[in-house]
Length: 419
Image (cartoon, rainbow, N blue to C red; front, side):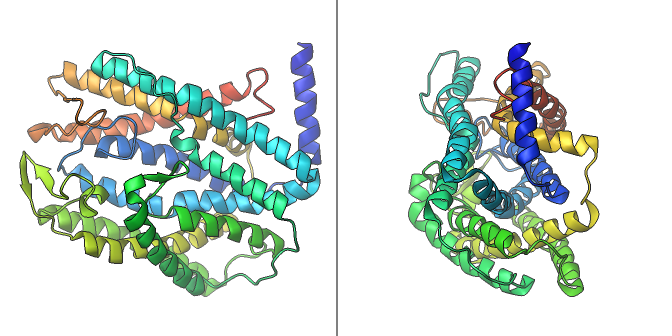
């Protein structure tokens, strides 16, 4: 009891020293975290980019899933980096460089190490035992904590760099779309040259990654020093951002739907040739892809840069105008968001395994072998609806379980000062 009282007092002191939080940014963080959970659930049912996957085959679910994944991938982690960059200057100024770095080592370094060397390998051990009946210790498995590692690196760089802040007016939406397009071209080159590595310092090499994350973090820092988020967007830009935030994702889904109908690839891996020879297998019969890897790289990846700028402006402005206050529930969700990010694989993976078990008991079998690992490409035929149902149930249960669980985890002794 005495220890808990001391922890509560320390938390209260920390909260008193912090400047008032911008509620709409907290609400964006909550929204983005929920999107991360949904994104990885979708990965699990579309056959790639996750620990344990089913549905790695041609189905009606793929156009919807791939459109959702590409739109999410274009902006959500970049916006996380922007928000992190925005809050870091005040924290560093308030605490001083040394205390700031020690705090980041505690709040970022410890969770990264625990997940990478304990929780992540335990998750892989669970999968190898459940799927193949053998025990395998992965040793190192950073999973989604790559973001925490990079945030620690960038926080240290900010604290150690010093210097006067850059003075710069907020770029217009149109200018930012141009920057996004240019970064998309850079991203395409990064994918071409670094895709064999699959990651760079644990960061996945994909749409909206390395150059975008670095630039968006830097923009967050500049935004803080220049009060970019003080005022809403001009009316023309605000309306345009909202309209484009709806139109561009719809065009993406339409593109993948057309590819699906015309018999072409409907996953990012197929389009850029990561699945073997680049051919998409349907019922065991390979065929030439409808969308060439060249067009994917020179059109879709740069276009995702425009998505990133548009969705960043739209989400921040909508949140500022419509979600700029806190309720008790929104505060609780914002407080739990970091823990949700850390532990959500420990919820999604077992739930997906549970879906496979239930499906198998219902006569719908998913096959796994050493060649495909934890990624099943079993053709379901007339049972293709099972992927839709499984995705919906697991996506819903993941959200319903992970947020209360994260809230409970944060209350454990010793964790409230870290999480």
